[in-house]
Image 1: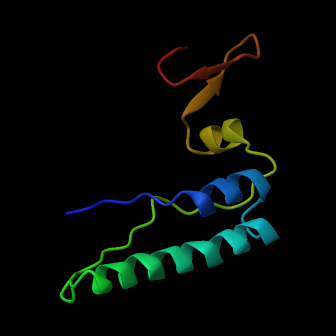
Image 2: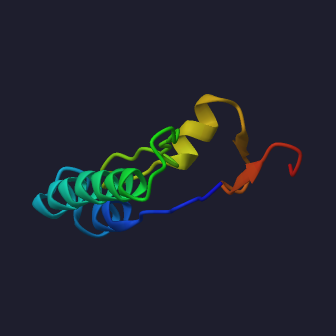
Image 3: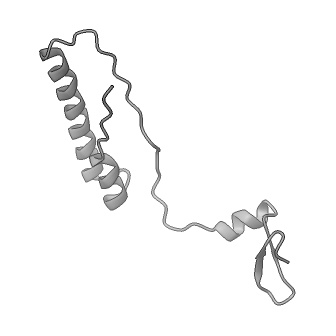
Length: 91
């Protein structure tokens, strides 16, 4: 078994944005690199090789994250009598 971690697209999405020109160019490179790996395997005589391709996650571009709002909606935090935010169990 061989594991290969191709990080080009992930890196470019983090740096330039999910739908950036750089991310789409990295996706094309990823597709080409995977094709090269498959072809090299065939050229080496391994015609009956199985490939499993996985992604570690997806992502979206986010400008702001409002965790306190999310936590409050789910009753995961409370506001103390001094106006401070406390996690459940810390009040």
